[in-house]
Image (cartoon, rainbow, N blue to C red):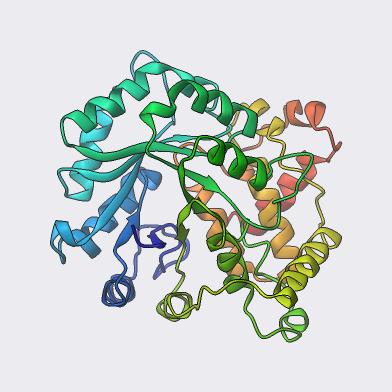
Length: 365
């Protein structure tokens, strides 16, 4: 596997309010540069009713031989009940991508589905796909609570070839909520190869004031990626390339070990981001589990903090829409004021008022 994966989540749109208005001229130029540079790992899921899978077909599969590329897709966890037809979902994904097999196929387990997807049926389904040569490698993409990851791996590690985890330096040592180090330690305990995603913690590590950037020679994106690449077991990092310029910059990074000065810079960034937080969310996931409207509250709060820190509305709105347009998530404006989240929040955050502010800023529908 190449160590820098190409995600379709932040592809450039001709109309920022229309997720289907893909700028294929820029996208195909990005794909061609990426492939010419010796990379070939493409990561998709079924968000936006399979839009990213269809986009993969148009920009990659129609233009390159299947054996030239490596493709990873996810078993979506929108619902899981007696009517959840795994085979039909999988076959529709293959059809949208225009392929007859996946190199990697992962169960997408997050705070909405972490308890449900300890069921053995889904892992047996993955194993049968491998036996039928429809999938070469199986695993899970996990963004729930770390202790539940350990529970899943203790039961189903034999079914898992690789694991995709949200890793970044910003919450590496978090002691209250989601901790990247705890994710990493659990995966390492089972000696699993790791693909990292969300290396910038919903933009929090890179949307920093220019005055901070001028104090160092290393870009914030480069620091975030090199921090992860130095970890044993991390075989790849999923990137949301936002433009051809962004892609070229990242692919030209020299992934040398971080210097002492760069470690100091990371510490200063962590301190700055934590000091400038408007919302003191610890990403514990309790609000997510209690919300009847499936609003990814903690994800939106990180984006709100990033926006307030940077005043970069376009970038944060693009990331917001990548969540809000996902079938399993809802917009901030969908809040019904039930107050269940407030009752459970350990930090006593005024979630309803903040969701209203979020909707006013980001919800251009």
